[in-house]
Length: 83
Image 1 (spheres, rainbow, N blue to C red):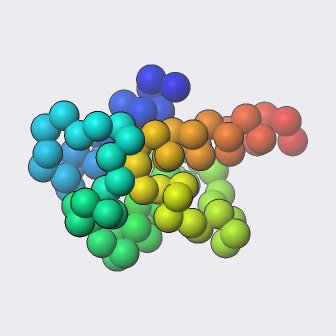
Image 2: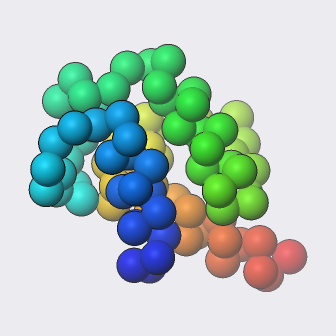
Image 3: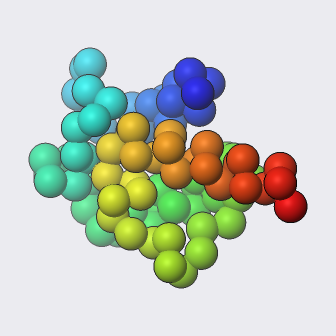
């Protein structure tokens, strides 16, 4: 979990210039990123973690915070190992 969080945090730090961003901070509600960035984020998550984000998974709640992304990625990775 720490590795996934660290990789997500490192990616976000290239675009969000806030020190000590809480893992549960809603980056969209805070206005730190926009909808265009959301698509970039989804693409990065797919490539970085070798997962596929389905159309039904393109929900803001899966990508609006570091915690949400870590949970989403971990669920996808666990599901992939069961296939």
